View (tube, rainbow, N blue to C red):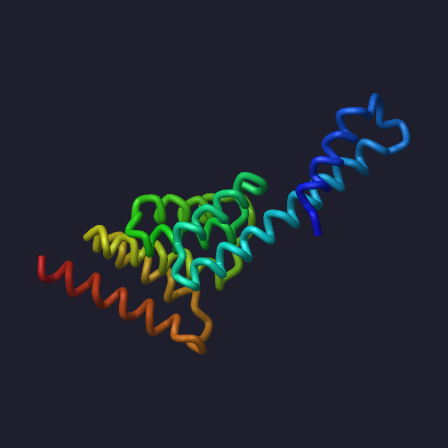
Length: 168
């Protein structure tokens, strides 16, 4: 699939439509949106593959390009946040995780717990233990099961933040 070529073609078509009496402009805009969404989805998928392979610079670039096309893409924002976390860019990670929470779109519980865990671990790294505790508690509230160790990870983060807060 060549979504770039599709995007270019639909943009040129839109520029050359004088009126929308027969729905041609609407159809071209729908095609453009579809190509942009598919391109964004491919970039997000590539970003996650790069991040899982430890190539976080490349992941950040892919997620950024996806967000240029779809600024509120929760999966891209979440991937960007985790890649930034792994690069030690904790403020940026928190910002991108928080963007998901502030968005107008509904948030699936699985995404919500992942976002709160991301904020929690980023806050832990920044020594902001109160915010870390709050975030890990919210993550735990949104975990339905622990099939992949998510609850264990959130509890570990909560314990680390509580211990560090007590020690300081």
